[in-house]
Amino acid sequence: MVSGARWLQRGWVSWWRAVDALVFPWECLVCGTEADVSPFCGDCRRELLEASGMSCRRCAMPLGPWSDRSGGCFECRGRSLGFDGAIALGPYEGPIRDLCLRLKHERNAWIAPWLAELLVEARAEVRLGPEEACVVPVPLHWRRQWSRGYNQAEALARGLADRLSLRLVRPLRRVTRTPPLARLGRTERANLLRGAFRAERSPALRGRTVLLVDDILTTGATCGAAARELKRAGAKRVVVVVVGRAGGKA
Ligand SMILES: [Zn+2]
Ligand SMILES: [Zn+2]
Image 1 (cartoon, rainbow, N blue to C red):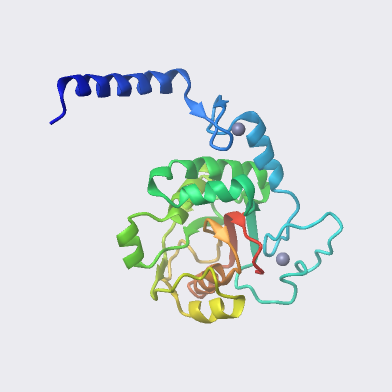
Image 2 (cartoon, rainbow, N blue to C red):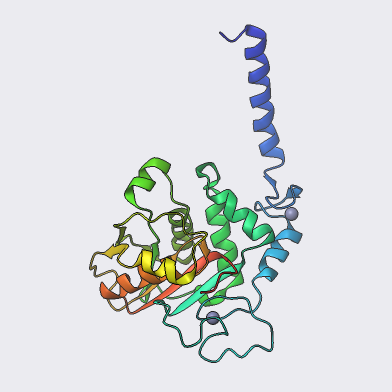
């Protein structure tokens, strides 16, 4: 039983929080200071946008200004990735890493549209006409989806589709469960993921560019396997779109 005094106190606290949210609608997700129109203050927003920097068009690896980028970068040149291009908000470090970690929890799903908005602003190349492109999230295995009840890639994909006025399509299914991939190398990941996805043939894919959305790109094995399957189902090109590009080789 909640005592009368406790109840009153709780009522007071929640009322105060509601007023607080009205007067100070945003607190910056990065530094905690007051923010005006989005959950990023001006400084942190600028920093996040600048973090995008130069990167490889094929695998989104961050690159220095003098890097040779013909046919990809030193990491991906001459290798078949399964996808045709990759776009990341920025390297998986600092605030971008922190935001990706938060997004893994369903209670923070509301961050996804704001990250999509930042990504579109930082990376103009993600803009494609609705007649050319659709957005597809990298799915979880149904058992994992069922136990977690949430997939951050799906939340991001929805945010991106809304932002770009593109259609969100879900033709992919993950048919095999894979163990955590974090400690595995590129070849081991690729072997485990072979045949991990199935895509339904869909008119929404035929002849189009697919923006394949995930939160983090590490070795590229997951997105590569999904992209190959999307192409088998009719997609013309697959461009991977992620928030963080981790240092692992593509
Ligand atoms: Zn801030
Ligand atoms: Zn590259």
